[in-house]
Image 1 (tube, rainbow, N blue to C red):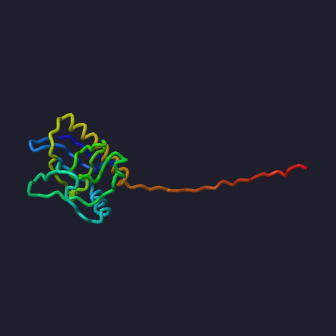
Image 2: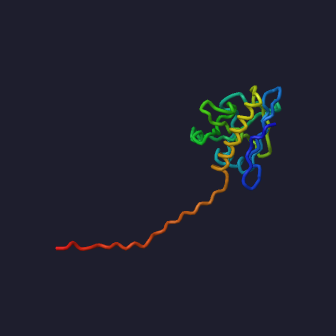
Image 3: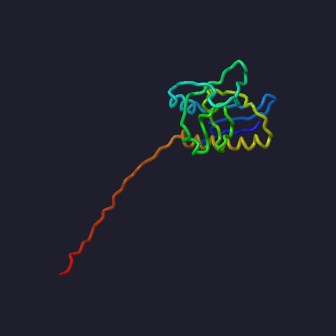
Length: 167
């Protein structure tokens, strides 16, 4: 098993992604903090969808169906090195961005398993896990971690000295 999740500064595992090689492909175990699932539910309007961009992701239990919270940012998130809307697609996309659409799976806050239908060497799994870990951290820090900013505008007392032109 290879851990590709992210633990915040408080030591809380907020994104857990485990990769386990099996005869069916790579089993992915995903569990997210409830705030993350609520983020997708809220910003996707509460709608759900099926695999949108591929058939690489299959339910671990064949009678189950993977459902995702609707959420589409276009290519905006790819500028940050990850993609949130390519459910069912490759874990690393052609442009090199990391596919984090598994964070949108309905029920991820309780934990979900699915099969990534691909053959991967151990070293490839480790490279993918590193990319997933870095992308998960970036996503959490940019979109989920609470932020408090204070804006302060100060004005310095300025005295302007002018001199009259001499005649």
